[in-house]
Image 1 (cartoon, helix red, strand yellow):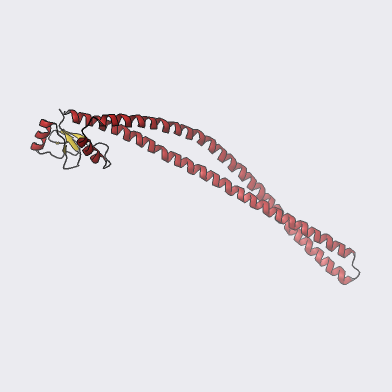
Image 2 (cartoon, rainbow, N blue to C red):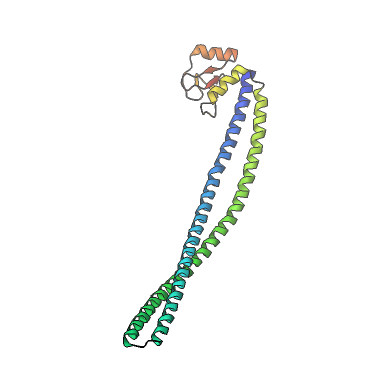
Length: 234
């Protein structure tokens, strides 16, 4: 095997390692995205529960204020009834007193229903706060583990890329440029040995003249079938 080809193969070996490390790094991102979606879902659910509880509390205060107003009206009507001087005035005051009582009864029934809903809403807030807190604690550990994995992979990547660059400096520029151009087409491996009379990648038959040239000079050739670089292995 020609020394230049041997040097190029060591570069390819490093590129395969770098590719694997980059895939490992990329595989961490979906896991982080899933955790972020789970956390957002829990937070949104908690916010909705809080908004519901807050709305019920506002409604409770409104109805309670209305009950107080109707009670004040009832007291006023009672005072008016106590001071009437004619049957006509007594009838009118009694009617107003009955109307105020009906409104108070309706408001108190509504207030009781709101109170029950408010209790349920507050329980739901507490439950969703617990879920969000537990999720955050669990994810904190997972994110810490993923961060450690990410850092370890990045360290390996830096080292692998530096070693690859050092080895690439020993490969003739024209040969390296051809290799990198082929590999840029989303190939993990760009260099293959001849396998008998054929391409070691796609089994396309290589003409005898080209095979003889590769064996005699150590030159590389491009496979007409799949476009990879070919060399004659010993």
